[in-house]
Image (cartoon, rainbow, N blue to C red; front, top):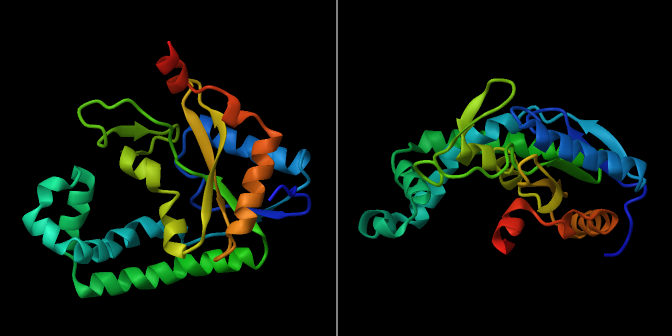
Amino acid sequence: MGQGIEGLRIGVPTDHFFDHIETDVADAVRAALTTMQDDMGAVLVEVPMPHAGYAGGAFLSVIAESATLFDEYTFHRAEEFGIDVRNFAELGQLLLAKDYLRSQQVRNLVRRDFERAFAEVDLLITPTTAATAKPPVDHPIFIDITYPDGHSEDALWAYCRYTVPVSMSGCPALIVPCGFDKAGMPISMQVVGPAFDEATTFRLGAAYTAATDWVRRPSYLMQTAAA
């Protein structure tokens, strides 16, 4: 801890992780990468991750594992779940064995993307979410978000589309603040390390946090609470 990141090779994915994204989020993460390269001595390397975009679909089949874990709750105590968890647990009851096995095949492809990337770089940097926090309308989860490229999705996917591939890969990830959008909502980047290398992710997180002041700037939420 306390070490700098000079000479660290940081991978920037060319696939999926900057697709369908709010401009402020993409700009903040790109600016953080520039800071790491120009001011902190890291080396940026573009890395292909051609299967990362399939992780979301495969994840829907992996929720069969959640259905197994929550089997008794789903049938007898479903009202204790939040609507999002309940939907996943109930959907998992409907999946076939072949769906689960196919999702594991896709999961292996996603994992290999990360393994190939880490043969070339020490860490990966991606946005954490595709969009910043939005006020609830009719429900705190089911909020539609539309991006500058015209793509639309609900907030649930906007907030997990970039984290699901990392979770499926089994790699450790650290979330580090790196800016705010024009409305004052916080933006963060995802620092992903090779399996079992949490130490290097913390090394970058500590160095970047020390070199910038994002964690010390009040967000819109903090300003509102203090008013």
